[in-house]
Image (tube, rainbow, N blue to C red; front, top):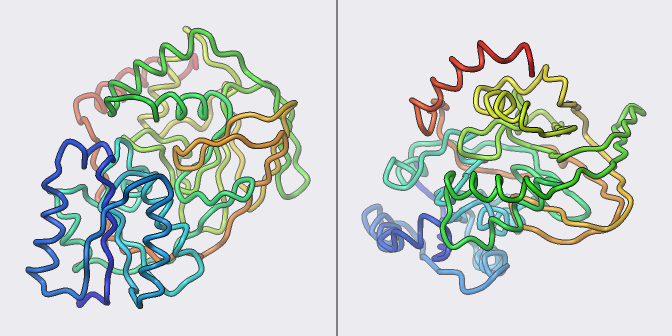
Length: 321
């Protein structure tokens, strides 16, 4: 399909982009090859992608493409919510949760071509303490890991796993009170609380199995405890879409949540970390973002052998998790 006037926003510090600077030239070559009314601009600092996206809207662009990870996607999408402009996504980060959920291929696997061959979808977006998120937000261990992960020199699942294990040794769960629409109330100590728009963090790690980005709802996952005994079964559930049903997990679905804790602390939205108060209101904004997506989603595990191994192990251990 012919593309409207477009702006490509390239984050040179995203994990994949930092290792593959040729992507900037690939974007320029794509524009030239298809004679698009478009330009590529690099980001220079945090939140710069939002500024560049707003400028693109002012200059008449109706397609704004984020070339980067979840943080870049968040910054660009934040400027497009509620407008008639469409978000394009070339997922180049370490997780790419929203991109994977929508079936958007990575760079070198047809991501640029998908902008031409795909279609526009309307998806929901979320707000947590006034901060937009499009894939997932989290509190507790989730936010602590995001804070440490953002400071790593090397990204990817192995680095994430090492950081998780180191943080796990000294982390203590907090107590949370969670209110959902419909007057449901839960009070519990929790290792982490995540609220997701899509079904996964990224890397095929499914924190909210069966969540959808177009149902007008958000999916909350509360993990009560993580121990040496339940860590492996829970990991298997995460990677095999079987998290529901574990006695260590509470799952809720609602258009609005209020989460209370005893003191201010960390919050992450799409992996970007900030401090916020002890009361966090989380709401969905139904059908508030236009995004370019493939016409058909073809799930593909990141590491097929690992995926199959988790499935085999899960059959033997799910009953005890």
